[in-house]
Image 1: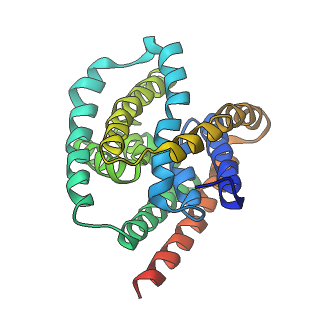
Image 2: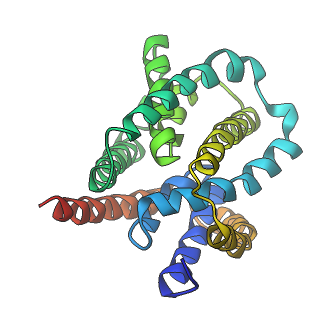
Length: 253
């Protein structure tokens, strides 16, 4: 990909994605993959965003490493998500092309609609802990989604978000999860020959978007009501998901 309008627009999407994550604590990859797929294609977005994500997650892990819950990480999250990623790699050999984009669109639509419903009508339900079998299933599911779309965050948050973790422990532990799993993804991309000189240059050109998004996110966090901001983001994701569904459905006709 060369420096053209689509790339410049995608850079703005990356800034917006890290603005969202800095303001709300979650969602950069989901926003970037959903909106970016409209511009340069789903698979290319994932290849660019996975190595770029190390900038933010690495900062959090290094600066707040004392907040990592190693027991939760090593005994439950990584083993179960690892199983899910292995299943995802098997699925990728069977499914490809428009079907991946269509499945991703439906996934984003379902998750965003659910979260919007909870945010508007069922806040109390979010505090109710889920059962251990449901948590284990969600962790495997998060691994599958992350292995295919690098966007396992919603399912992971669903699995461990109501276990009484402090905000610091929650953020640091999740950041460590993404570092480990994204190392696996980057290794897979390297072995597949997906990173050539042109892709590396695109990644370098996108590096400044991350600190810019962090700065904007800090401003948004202090100036705008967080609940209203989250609702606006979810509505945007729903609209983008519908667009993806229409786009990839047309390719299958």
